[in-house]
Length: 377
Image 1 (cartoon, one colour):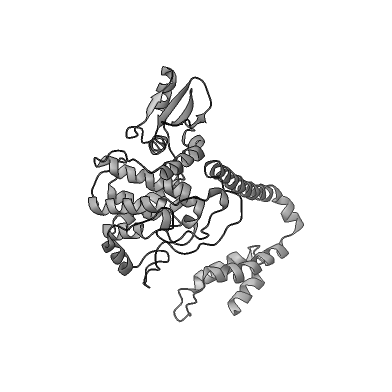
Image 2 (cartoon, rainbow, N blue to C red):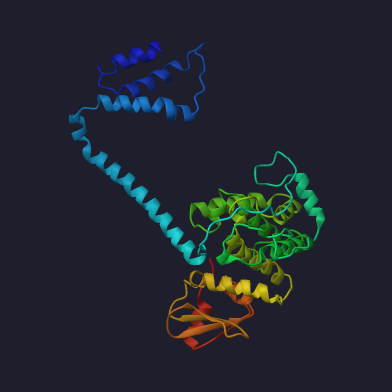
């Protein structure tokens, strides 16, 4: 305290800011034997130390000095305002895209009636991750009978959805069937996303739901995407039985239990990756029940503009083969048409053109443009 007082008193004479002299004095005194070691957390510095220093600096700043540096100060202030504006604009743009692809239905949210599965046993695992014991139990359980009209066998009484999106939860059935298939094939089986194997698919799906920090990087480009890839690579090194059991257990409480997320984003995710594994291992197209086809067609309609956004020089129509249901995915002439069962059309729009069993028809130029286009997220 004495040293700090002396430094503060004599700081004005050499015309050196007192905080700078205090830092130099601290560096000089620190190595002296016998000086007590003080641990100061960043929170204390931000809340206790920094405000008085800034206040003192403002009090000592003369108007003449401020006029001398007003230009760089104004530039920095404008830069801060611009950064804040860009953050708000980016948030608005992301919200607009999300609204276009997965528009939120109207109505009030209602609380969830219950979890996907009984709560896991207590453990020292991070929050949101199943314990080793509960994962092992679920991994040994094998195939789980799931009624898609309910929340994994639990009645759908007031889950997080509004009346505009009411309907069955088919993501639960896809999750259970994919978990069974992963368990059957093992960690080294191929997928349509080569060089990804079944281990990579499992790690990807677990990270999507349980790593709140890296999860957004699965759809966002740049440094965040690279960070998510590193986290996924590390996650893929874990025991494969643990990965499949964690996947089977369902998402933790939060965003991925919301009704419209399950019916749209999660159903798409699990259906497409289920087919990534099935088709790469000699399993052909499935015949879905009518309600499942309706749910997939609903998702085709919701996401068609976004998934076909890279198509150039042609229009595009999507048709549910065997029905009169047709929607336009891209305006323009000449226009091509993709026809097939809803699940196959969805696979095509998600970039699985070689595997999707669809018919692409129309003028040659339009068909060629569709075949060249890169669909998907």
